[in-house]
Amino acid sequence: MGRQRLRAAMRRRGLHALQPKAFTPRTTDSTHGLRCAPNRLLDQPKPTQANRVWVSDITYLPLANGDWAYLCAFQDMASKRVVGWQVGATIPEALVISALQRAFWAQSPTPGMLVHSDRGGQYCGNVYRQLLHDHQAVRSQSRRGDCYDNAQAESLWSRLKTEVLEVRERPVFANLADAQRSVADYFD
Image (tube, rainbow, N blue to C red; front, side, top):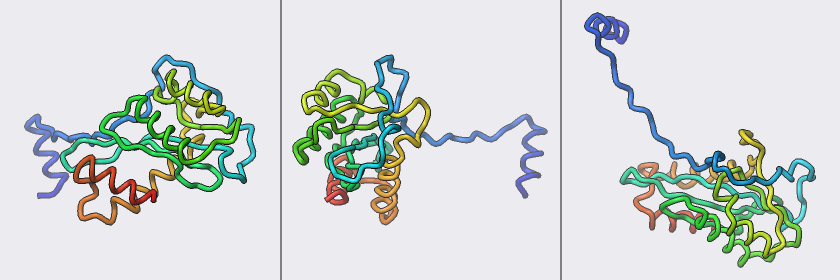
């Protein structure tokens, strides 16, 4: 029986097919009510020296049991090197703080360095803002609803997922520890 014939037969009986919708977790919630920073990258030429601009974002990583792990990374815009990252089971501000602390331990920031992200609540919290202030870094955030403002960070996720997940038998990580280990190997 063809698709059209089946559809017509179901319609005559008052039936309809149930279509499960694929679930993709949201990593950015910009309706948090916290104050966002302006997009300071718009006024800047593309950096040619390291430690002038870092970009950051959070992505989800699929686990074999159907859960998600979350990855936050900070990438130097000029060298494209990931300077700090963290994988966790949830996406609180602490995930971003851990990744940023790793970045500051790995690279001494230039005073006035821009740290750019999307408008997620994790990048607007008091602890995050204080950590940037303590290291003389300047916060910058994308404009509302414009994913192209943080395109370099989004591109990192595309490359990571293609190069790490697509070579596996199943495009998932076995568990949180496997995700952490795989991401560490990839960034190293």
